[in-house]
Length: 191
Image 1 (cartoon, rainbow, N blue to C red):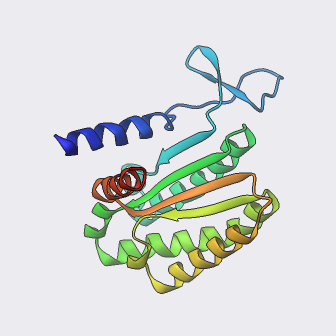
Image 2: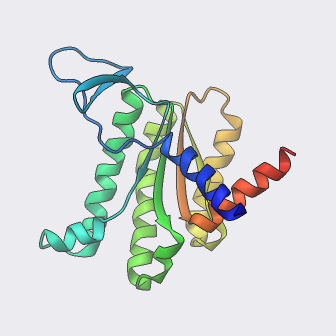
Image 3: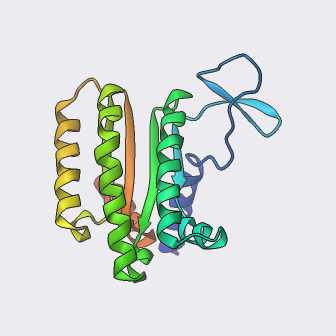
């Protein structure tokens, strides 16, 4: 019973931040605080979360390798993050690598982490110029040491940067059990 209650709270929190279909408004007008969703105009959510999934499958389905799919997906993700901030969102969460992804072949896992590291490095100037703070959630201690050190550097800079107006949250090595643990810890601290 308690597990179902926690799961329900988790899902409600997640559903309140996720946007599945987003496209800019048509026409010559540019809007920074609303977009067309389906047929009506809606206010842009302050927090948008994206589940980055299916890139390897997409690569195979398009006569590419899984690695090519991950590379194309990573490049597209950078564009999506920039667009989300340009449209007015203040927080963007990317669900990048779940605990279930650890069952993949080690070569694919290392490729994904190397891709993440190189994209973070090349994306860092944009983040700095646009006052975007980075937070990482999940089991960071399971990641390669070079990626852990890069994350620590970003987190240290975020703590010292009081001018941050936007936040990019990277969910790496996350899963339902981890979310439930965080939720229970939070609820316990509120009692």
